Image (cartoon, rainbow, N blue to C red; front, side, top):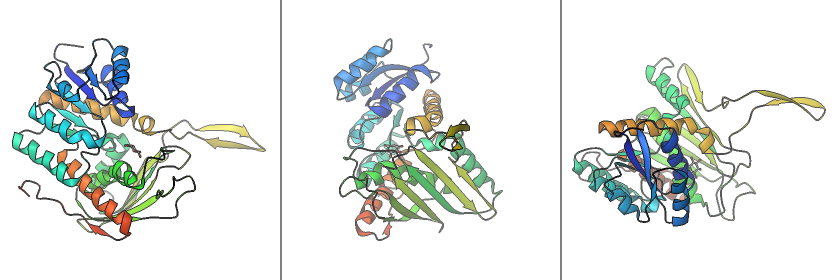
Length: 342
Ligand code: ISE
């Protein structure tokens, strides 16, 4: 720890925020955890006590304004992101904002424009797959042209379980949003149309929830992306992405690089590895690299990785996806002019 360390405040210390707080406190060089805020003040207090020199601040906007906080991680729910990100922009503080950027395209666009009018990029979006070594290698391979043109991308995204309050729309907005970003990242193009299909739901799904969901994106260049999102698979966290090109394919996330084991079982032997329980395990390295890249860039006064525009585009695709979830029909994605006033 040195005087030039980036002093970081974390807003929202539930599952992901607490994980990021620990990462900043112990695994991010050049960064120091100094403050945390959460509507559950007891939770924030308990977390602050775990680390030396960390304060719990009740009001998240006071944390942003605090002169002893150089940069902010926002891991609160999406519906409070707009005012928190705006406050960070107003105070000129580098920010890492977890997805979704906001709950609808209009408010996300307001943040894009607010950042643009400030004259300097400040916000990195928390799309961690872009920092996962396998996704990075897949993207590098596709970009190298060695496999020829990229034709189709197949994404699989499964969670072991979610609470009954995790409704069909959340599967689009909170889960599929990652694949929206992956498609845009790997192709380097916008998504122009989305269709969300509703297969027969698993018997584990809460009443009225469409799980799994299968969706198809049409990319600006004409290619197609398929996605399966299944949030109650009862097994564990399985996330993969296969790029199908003219002369070969590449897959990230399968098999998960893990210890291969054999075991005596029943009449026969058995072999296997293990499936991570959730995203914190599977993407631990990606999160480490994401936070390190953010801290390094923040100290240099730049932004690397996904931007507010990426957050905005993902929000608009998900809005169209929620419309398609209801109708089952393809819905066009209409983005504002990237630099313009619209
Ligand atoms: C959660 O919010 C995440 O971001 C996870 O990566 C995703 O797998 C999960 O479905 C979401 O609820």
